[in-house]
Length: 364
Image 1: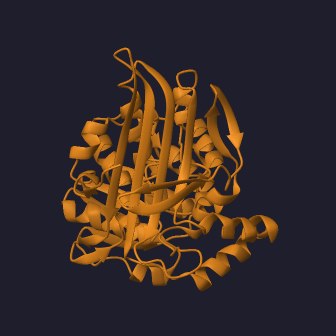
Image 2: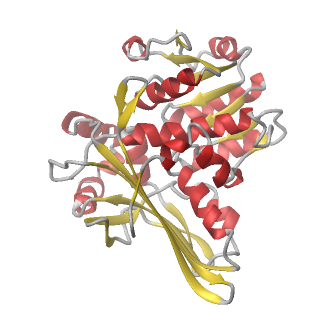
C-alpha cells in the first residue's frame, strides 16, 4: 500500500480520496487548514485527515515524510509552496492546475529532481491533452487540432446558464488570462473570451470561446508540427456575453476576489451536471485529407455509496489514473512528465481512467 498526501479537502479532494481509498492500494492523508472541510471527508479506513497550514515549512516536511506522492487539489496559487516542498522531500508531485505560470514553475523544479513532477492531471488540461495527442500521432501531417471541453449543469436555471462545479479561483483565472495557441504555424497568445463559435452536438446547442490553460504543454509538443492548435471552453449560448460584461466592461477582472464572492454567493453548486469532451483533428493520412473526431459525455453517478458530480469524477479520475500509472512503472519516475507522455490506451483501461470509458458516447 502506498501512502499519499492529498493537499486540499474541497469537492475534488473528496472524490480523489474516495477513489484511491476504495481501490485498497492507497492510504490517503487529506490535509487542509479548514476543520469544516476536513470534517466533510469520507469516513474510510484508507483515509486520514490532518490539519495543516502549507505555509508552515516544518509541518509540510513532516507531512511529506514517508509519502510516495503528494497530490495538490489546492488553488493554483499554492503550487509555489507545495511543489518546492515535494522536491525537497524527494516525493512525486501531481497537481490539477490550469495556470500556465504555475506549470512553468513545476517544470523548473523538475530539473534535476529525483522524483516525478506531473502537473495538469485533471480534465482540461489533462485528459483532453491525452486524447488529442493520441489522435494527432496517427496523422502523417497535421492541419488543425481543436480541443473543446465543458462542465455544464444539466438543468441551467439562471441567465449565465451555469452552476459552480469546481474551483472558483481556477474558473476566474481561465476567464482572465491570455490563452496559448498555434495560429498558422506560429506559437502565439490570444485573448480570453474571444473567438466565439457555435455548434450542436447530440441535439444540444453550445458556444465555445478562448480560455486559458486548457492546452497544457501541447503547444510546445506540437510546435512546428501543426498549423492551428487551440482550446476553447464550452458553455450554453449567452454565457460568454455576460462574462465579458462582468469581467471586462465592469472591470471585475481587476477585482477577482470580489468576482469570486459574487459567484459563490449567487451561483449554487450542483451534482446534476455533464462533462463534454470534444476533439477534432484534421490533416493528411494515407495521402488523403482526413478529419477524425472524439466526442464524449460523462454524467454524475454514485461512487462508494455517494453521488458525485461529473466534474468531480472526470477531474479526479485524471489525477488518480496518472498516479496509478506512475506507481505501476508506466510513466517516468523522475523529472518533468507531460500529459502527452501518458498512453491513451493505458489510461482508458485503468481502473480509475475507465470512468471516462463508462460514460455515454455521443455522435458528432
